[in-house]
Amino acid sequence: MSRNPTNEQITAAYQLARERYAMLDVDADQAVEKLAQVAISLHCWQGDDVGGFEAPDAALGGGIATTGNYPGKARNADELRSDLNLAYRLIPGTHRLNLHAIYAETGGRKVERNALLPEHFSAWAGWAKENHHGLDFNPTCFSHPLAESGFTLSSYDASIRQFWVEHCIASRKIGEYFGKELGTPCVTNIWIPDGFKDTPIDRKTPRELLAQSLDKVLAEPISKKHNLDSVEAKLFGLGSESYVTGSHEFYMGYALSRKVLLTLDSGHFHPTETIADKLSSVLMYVDELLLHVSRGVRWDSDHVVTLSDELEAIMQEIVRGDFVPRVHIGLDYFDASINRIAAWVIGTRNALRALLLAFLEPLAAMRALEVAGNYSARLALLEELKGLPFGAVWDYFCLQQNVPVGGRFMDEITTYEERVLAHR
Image 1 (spheres, rainbow, N blue to C red):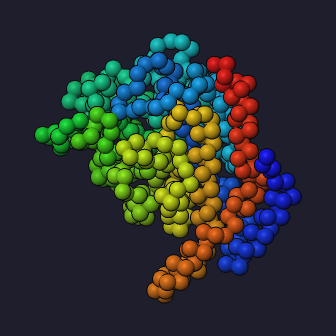
Image 2 (image 1 turned 180 degrees about the vertical axis):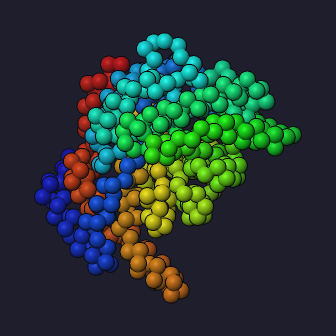
Image 3 (image 1 turned 45 degrees about the vertical axis):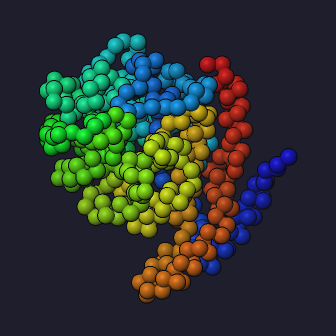
């Protein structure tokens, strides 16, 4: 039977690790302090399989699919907030929540998406304020009758385009409301599913229409103190295998020309691409980025984040480039095959662990070797870092933040599942 380390053992192990890192001129205390300042935006849709509260039993659309039928998904906002409360208690640090528009609370009344108001999210704002969470937001341009054609903001139908323009304008107002209420800017991210399943004749016109629609959405200035607009690209999706209107190149140009944030989703590119290499290039020209962290497996980009080489490379690039203040990190996956709270906790803790690994690098020494052209020594140092006692620093950080160390967080999730989830 496994035993958990005592607080004294965790602290003693950290002191030894601290000394070991100090031999490389790495300040472990400082790394822990930096990590405590990073807020990751958890994605609400992991908790209920992207159902939302508008029509929870409606079929997903827009190329979105969840797999699995693990019991206990949240059925309403109170259940979702209860599940999130547990997740946050098991994750070190103070973090944010990313909401989609379909998570509005309308008191049982039918409210069309283009008529959504801040008041429909007041309970979310109150909960966030009470728990010291920032809120981010997304218009929901899928799973709706006016998205069944596969086109929204780039539709050839002007009335359909206008509906989604109005919905995105309403979403920006909700983002502004969150920013004002919580004292931290809301990142309002626009993603649309628009595209063709087979090869189109005209690739240009839908993109021209998309640019026109986005310009209408962004026409009214909103202070960046309250709301930050972002646009998200994708390579392909279910039902848009051959052409996506909002490609990376389209949104890169749009973000640069309109001075908005660009969203990079780690699952929205070719499986052989990593977004780590894109960060330093894009951040030469855009002020800030929104980063959606997910894990791609074959065609599906929405697996729970693991401590993989790709995740480590992304976080290394953020830290090595001194981009931490300019990158908003959020998660974006939905796994219905495992406990949904565990999916949140495991993924977020892994994102934080990858960041800690990056904060524990001897950057000055590595850069000096690179500038000197001593690539052999650079490689040797990088490989030696993999064997340093990073785990002891992570355990100490969890202890310091008063969250479970190691896999002990599963004990609380299992208890909650037996007490709460099993009765839904």
